[in-house]
Length: 53
Image (cartoon, rainbow, N blue to C red; front, side):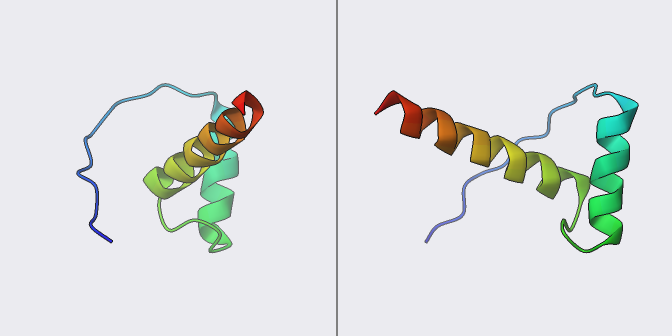
């Protein structure tokens, strides 16, 4: 499977969300902050697409 081109974005999030992401990184759930955000958005997108069917 070909990898998709990634683009850099800037986002502002609440401190508690950032703390949760950083804890996930410490616990090896996520590799990076970007990984956590992409994971969460991908899950949300799939859930929304499933609801639309």
